[in-house]
Image (cartoon, rainbow, N blue to C red; front, side, top):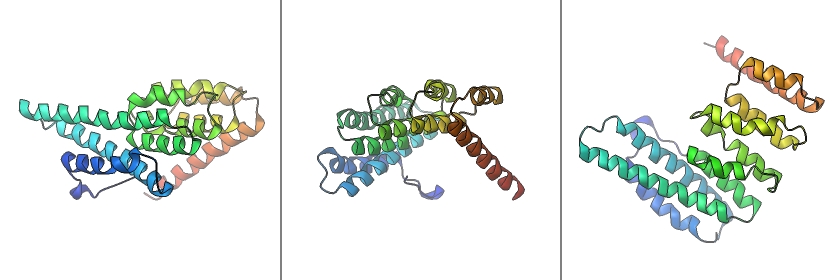
Length: 216
């Protein structure tokens, strides 16, 4: 993901120009696959930065003219989001779907939730479904209950693929479920291997947090 120093964050206008420059590189059929994939990821990161910059500036909008500019940029950001959503809908190959899902994750828009849910369906390949679940991570910071409700059926479906359930479990933890919810899920888990995975994963997180606490 693209990052900038705190004192060197470009304005929304500059980011908009950068995005418009990237679009031609990802619109048609790619000549160099690696460059194409990198451009898509950068595009998603730039859209996120674009939206974030405008949300931050909204608090500073006092004049009506400033608010109109803000509304323009918010509408414009949706145009860029729809560009990626359209490419994702048209994608045929799993490899392209996965990289587009990563770009969508970089944006982190709740408006993409419906499309992500569709790509979690059993008709998609395991790699696509797993990446669609992981794309929910950035959404969990905005609406953790909505995301938790999305992954919950996958997590509790004992006939589901292990990789998909594992991804759903990891995203569920990002949603900070209650201890009671997690205990109920683990107590009823019939798959011993999956139960072992969840326990080890949580122990690793606890160990890392304890080390962070001790280092303060």
